[in-house]
Length: 442
Image (cartoon, rainbow, N blue to C red):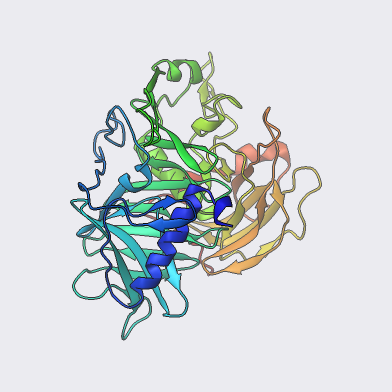
């Protein structure tokens, strides 16, 4: 069996074995690298220099999100970390639950990269949730189906249970900074996107990391790809591609909005969190995700006609929801609680269901219409109700899947197509940052 395991799975098996040791102690120190696989067994690597971790460019959107050297080695899955109190958390790692001991376990690195340790999060005394021992200041709480880890400094990590049975971090919030972590269907980390729109995407060969691509700059003006070198061979050369003309190709001259701003990115991240699963991507500000640039024009918002009239685009006062950044995953589809009535079955043409809310977000007396619902059913999941899966085809890619969501003024049911533009409300203002996003009944 061991001969059939990939290197990534071997590392995971070895990590689980090490975690079993940590049940008896709050911390377990191990040398760098964490583990190496040889043949059918696992051996701890000899003591060596501290692991190099990469720093973030958090405040300047004109710089790449992550500061990287010219060459990357095979330790990338441990080198990309984010601050967790006095530790660093490797973003490729998971939050593990030990059912027998009734506690959660998190692998972290020392700030200087000198060693890895396991932190136990035990059931907290006197309240619900879990907490780290001593004065680490880490607590873990439930938020619906998500697990929220909060540091003493107020940084929050949101973990969701994925199909592989592990809790992966899908969002980090650090005092206004939001980083969204996207995953592929096999639960591999696919991309990291911050609320200025900068992104880091990862390529894989089988299950091993093979490349890293960063996009940054004004309206994603620059892009660079690094090949991840196998540690047994010479470093691979980096490949750089300039896409400074990306904006001029994708945004028409008469577009009313010419830049995808930090506020727009934050709005889309929040809407993805309301309507989608951990890997969902929302587009409600006129711009499609970068991964769909070849499917549709990049800009699908308002445009100005020659006579001064505003021409509404497909994503004007509407949002698209995708299961992942490339629009190929049919992920879960949710709506807020609080509706008091709904249509019984999806419409035969575009699988639309409407929901009437006495209050939704910032407004009262509105109807939410969800188009392209697959596997329609209602399932109460805390603050949200699952209504099925993302199911609408489109574009030139046979794997393309999306759902289309609109909000109308009043108890309208599904309006006639000619009346929808007059009744539509902007979802980015109805469900905007800072507002209470969960619907409330009178």
